[in-house]
Length: 329
Image (cartoon, rainbow, N blue to C red; front, side, top):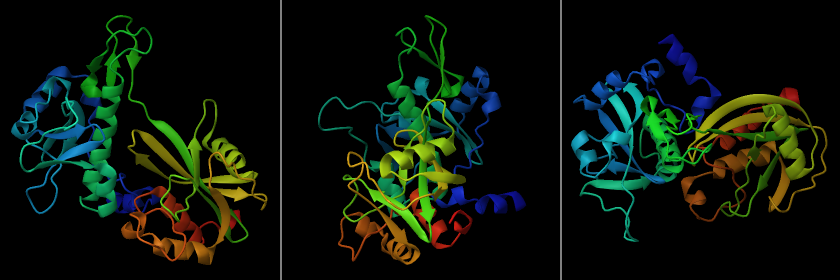
């Protein structure tokens, strides 16, 4: 219980998709006999991914993520391509891809089942945090297999291996592993103010921490410095890691950092940002208070706001408002 209590206090546990408690049993992935037995287990359950959505049983009071074998079979899934997600108290859990729809009508589901966008589930808080974490794992892993059916070395069809945590090329022998793209997301602070920007695609009025992909041969800290310099023209000194978040759209790892800004003058990259500015603690606190699902969905706000609590950017701003960044200011 003490270990669980300590984990609950980690900043990374505050955002969505971070509460995956599955035992991934990685040491058993190469045991094909063990995997086959787990897949045939009467207690095995299946998470079905339909491109960018997940299939839920919505007949009850809350959406149910885990489908029994018969429910998954009714969708026409291919059990030979199931990926092993892990073990939980109820039994083994696997991920499966729903068949692709043949026409514009889309995937036709049996009564009581519905394909739901993962982001909307997180916004609404419609499922337990633990299920969001499992759904994120399934969406990223199943999606990777759907996008990487061919060897990037020789172009031949590759095959699923080790419970879905590897693909092997039978032609050239190359091994391919699930892709995770690291992205730094950072809040620069200076003299009681934090730096945020907005992109044209954001909901009207929303500002967020700056972010960008980590490049080859680059540390997280140097990526933070480069991105802030590129997007806002601000030089950065010290960089402190704060928290991380899996972001399954499709398979990103957000690395949240706090950064010491060395100057005030903003020179925004207008190809990336519609606006970029400094906000005081009082302004940031008001922006946190305005961050509601209604405002995010288009309801009028009485001022700018930040991303919802599902996103790590929200918690970076909370850390600033709570004065957790004073040593950088």
